[in-house]
Length: 190
Ligand code: FE
Image (cartoon, rainbow, N blue to C red; front, side, top):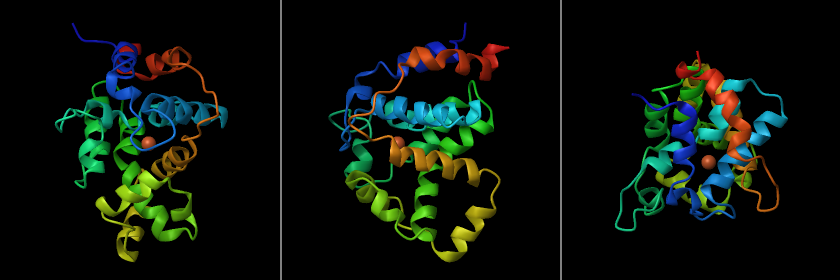
């Protein structure tokens, strides 16, 4: 029997890795709940709320490194490709309107840093560090190609929430708040 999206996501956000900080002022689970809540508060479509909530799923699926910390490989200087890993996992339940912004949220950072003056200054210290590991800001041709790609807009929207969702003070909603939305979106929600 296959596990429902709601159960899988609840389980993922309950892992030990979700309680790690990864160099930010908030834990991974707080970061994800804040991102989802910011999307919800901004009345974004359900698929984008889900993508915001789950954009770092790939970090939590990772079990590499001696410490087994999520994101440890990335912080140590190798690009761990957590966007693609998260997207592959989420594709068991969700379509491209959820998985593509997740897959592309690191590329969206590289795009925004290349095209928006001042965007680099919005990045957290940890995120600035990983930018260099992830290839740095896009070149002009790469940025044009990215902007013209199908899911660039949603990916950029998720990325902006990613930067905003590292606030050590803001209270968001718990995962229960998001489960009906996830169930309605998921293939098991039919
Ligand atoms: Fe993030």
